[in-house]
Image (cartoon, rainbow, N blue to C red; front, side, top):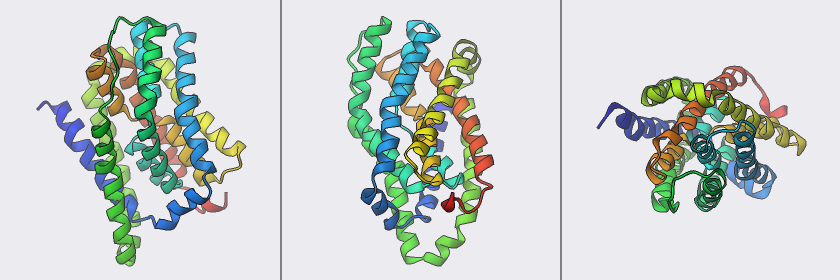
Length: 292
């Protein structure tokens, strides 16, 4: 195993699973039942993730006249759902964690159907010479969601139920640990993609930055337009702009068999960690978000 493989296949999933465990200790079943009872926030988040994000990505690829390989790489990223990293950022930003987890899980499952459809159109439109049938590893994708997200959070919620005082005492230490792990994950992403960073920033640095800022901006504006509270607006903003870069990279390099398509993904990963870090720095200091 190379260092990049160890980071991507062992360190990142294990770190995120630990964070999900701590996140679960801040949640109770009522947090999720509230989403079912009032589904407006979840629906807005899903529309942003599954509808607006690909449209914005497609439009930018045309406006910036990207070559076919870069355009399809950008679309690979734009079709992917949010990942566990988005849940981590929402936790530190003191957003609606239950909403974030719900959006990640549902969008990940729905995207199994939407990714092949959108990417097939992108390959045809941009004229890439990649002639493949796009089939996602459905079972592996679901298992990834379960192992990294659902199971650790469920265990954390069980701890919260039966060891409430312990769970409450662990909130601050786990938030600090989340921040530290976020920084380590950022460093790991750079280490795993360092060969592509220079090329990526030169070729698609600007367009990926604009994509990140626009998707986050649209997420926040739609949340406020529909009068969602600030905690839910944070979750939708983050879920709209923080993508599952690992899944995107797997699709580009394994399914589409084109390493160059991973260049926009590497560039975007840097930007989303920077913008996510800024949000954590600014919003993590805030108090009493429920009333805003």
